[in-house]
Image (cartoon, rainbow, N blue to C red; front, top):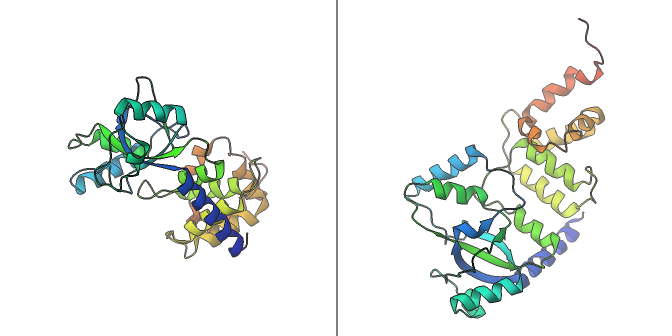
Length: 252
């Protein structure tokens, strides 16, 4: 994707996100759901928990702690009626965001933030029963939704295996259409990461992609993404010269 095309796509997504943003509200923790997330990573939960403790508590109102969630018009209207709030009240600039109560059995689909919420629940000095949510209309496009998912803030730093998986995913190697915009974003993010033993992690990953047999072998694990967690880009320039791919049988 050209730089001009990348910028045009980015602008279009930002415009849609702004148009579909309903506002900000504080909602009960119990209604938050993370339908597209894996099980929480205990190590990452512990890392964020320690961060909260160093900061002497978690502040759900901070912009980097807020969580994007989707809500349909019917559910929103019921919540506004139950709380006697107007839609305009959700556009408050803060810091006193309104509390939005929902009827029993209601759940909000959150696009990210699972580790942050789990860490807060485990923090001894966390007494909040509400979390601050950025509400978006449920009919937001998949592209804009994915853009919200890809926003990481302090949630966690992707490991080398996730860089491999995401870039291959958006290259269209796993059966879905290629998405040059998100592929470019992950390449750009990789460029900012320092990898021990490798001055340029982009070069190491490109080196792996250019080796057909190794790339094919790694791609075969696409249905078990957790396996990629053990990948270390710093080892690529040592792995390929070993010519392991040329060994078909082992003498015993």
